[in-house]
Image (cartoon, rainbow, N blue to C red; front, side, top):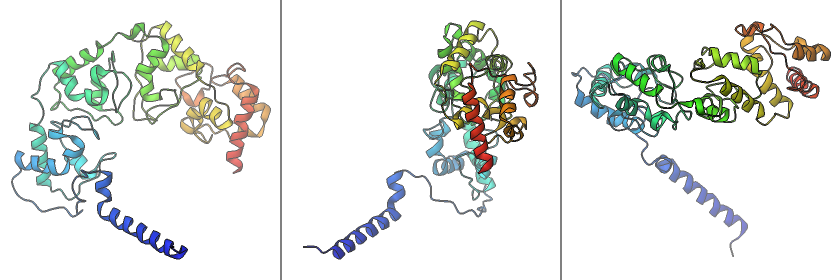
Length: 361
């Protein structure tokens, strides 16, 4: 019979063996192809002449696992990186989840650039080929939505601006990668992919809005939560667009040709029909946080709610009356008026109680 102390010793030895095993092979268990070993951050001295062949060898050793064979995209980063003009900035500094590679020499970076410039299909102005090459990895077949950007871009007309300047995680494409003529044909191709004027409001939201605002309008790192909006203000924002000051994405203007008035009304009704928040924090986030910040301290408008908390009547009056009339363009001087059909008196009190809990804590 094994005594308790012996059981403890057996367990201790077992755990120790597992830890040692994982220390040597844990990375292989998590990822059987973890890529190159960590690079010494001391830059290598390499005065040899750069070449495509050297660049290919370096790319295979350091880049292929994330960027795919020949830089045509992979699961980790599906967008191709062919013909990039200056890979050195990203290689040196990293980008988002990509670590920096400080040890790769300047000459080696030139070699990688030469290799990428020679990789991929030959340049073409054929729009379908360019869409498949540069867009499909993130936006899915025919722009209907993909792994990196789930919303449809079918019918989108501001393609040129986004392609040249980039947006969010999407890198900009230089003329060396996509010529002006090729970009023009690509823009026309994407614009003609689908006619969404027959979509219902809910269908339109799923296709064009959810990629930034979330499929339940809960908000993402690309866009605000927008459930239960002020219809007049939301309609104005949709028609006018919004510059990307708070988010990496600029929201385009949706004109009548892209979103009919009937569709806009249906879209706003759909947002109003979403499940209502039922707690002070969620009510605040839904109705107030976009402008006043996560803690009521001012947010993008610079308008703190701390002084308004001192008087219950004044707080409720401010919610009911709003501020700034229809001066929608100036967020610092406009607040929509919320009637009791949109936010009840009890819900306003719950918001105020929540804000008080933040200031008292």
